[in-house]
Image 1 (tube, rainbow, N blue to C red):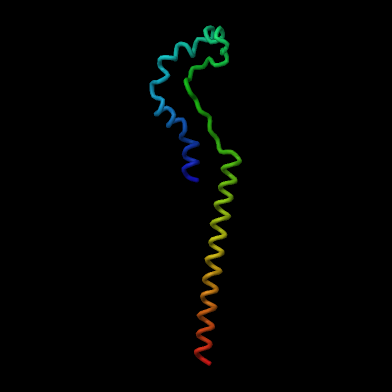
Image 2 (image 1 turned 90 degrees about the vertical axis):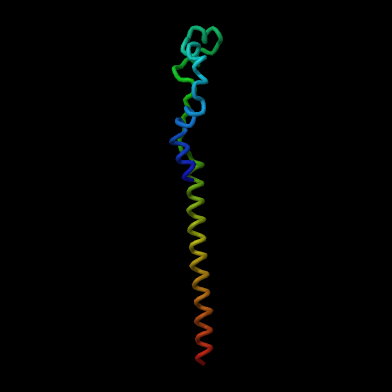
Length: 98
């Protein structure tokens, strides 16, 4: 869960590191709207080569709820097991006294 949150907020840094200067040769073409319009992709004109947008969506929150429910369930199960162990010890203790 922590890795998912970090990757959402640091994706831009990772992409910048991995792409590096790969976009330099295409920079002049990407900023020239006239050439891109002739090629039929005028909408692609931009100052940035690759700008990922990331955000936490419903899937993350569902996964978080599932993890929290699983932790709570295991905790309740652990407490129940301890109670059962103590009942066994108490019954052994009372049998030994009688």
